[in-house]
Length: 433
Image (cartoon, rainbow, N blue to C red):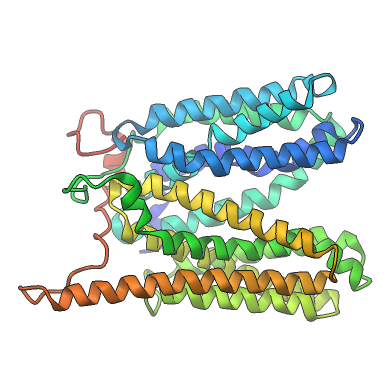
């Protein structure tokens, strides 16, 4: 299945809505710092607001994802995005100069919490809009789009905040998120969930809990991104390299990730099981980050970051594909939301560890300790997935029919994109919203 086969009107509409609701998320932390930087203790307050925003995402994503009814996902999404749009607009309307920090913190918390289930639901919606054989390409395209957004967001925030005013990025974010609400009605109402329901009425939390190894390895993969982003400026100073190189070097990492996602999607399948692919890719990214820590030249660091980026996006893609294999279709949006929270927690944990270590060790050493945390998480996740595979094989061996018992239910059969575009209101209730 080639990329050209997913370039359809529904997917293009989905891409526009995805940009409108995800660009504010990418802009938020830096925009909050610029919003209050001119107040007394502004940078400290900005960091606290950014932390409140991320905390809202981490806490709310699994809660909202679990509560989302797949057959009525659109209103859930719309309400969350409206909350985010209002919170961003409130932050940008000039209240930062007079509002109490607690008020700003609550608005930042709401801005993070409201739309936190949207990435997972949008991903589930995308995979329901394309044929089953094109799911890998669709997820690769999503990854390319996401890394492009994250590469553009810092420059957009900086330009608007310094050129037009500190509240302007927040106002733009509110407008974009409001536009994404309207855009939801140009998309299918949902994705197919029949054929993989929970016949035994198993609670959603237990269904999601079975996929814990995927969440752990997903968190492991993003700890490396935290190391690259948060410690790089200090590392450059340690190497007597101009700190201004931090931006271009991180842009190279993002570009490498976008290229890696595109290349991964060129093939319908790669050798080895998804858990094996994921572990190999995480080890490769870890090796690249280790090279960043030990190499003394700016050019060598740039090359190591680009190579690490090439493997970073496929590592996350394998986690999303594995989650899709493990979970029934009605639980996919919730599973993606839990993954979103897990990788955010991994990012925060790695950043906190690195920040604490920087007080007592050199930046290069802090990076190596962070890589150690990544490898520990990857090993725990790999052990969990290996145990799951062994249990599945044991179940297959004891089957009376002698047939293979799959470790996880098969992925849902996605509807044709044209059917998805037509919506599901006129279709049977088994198609989810």
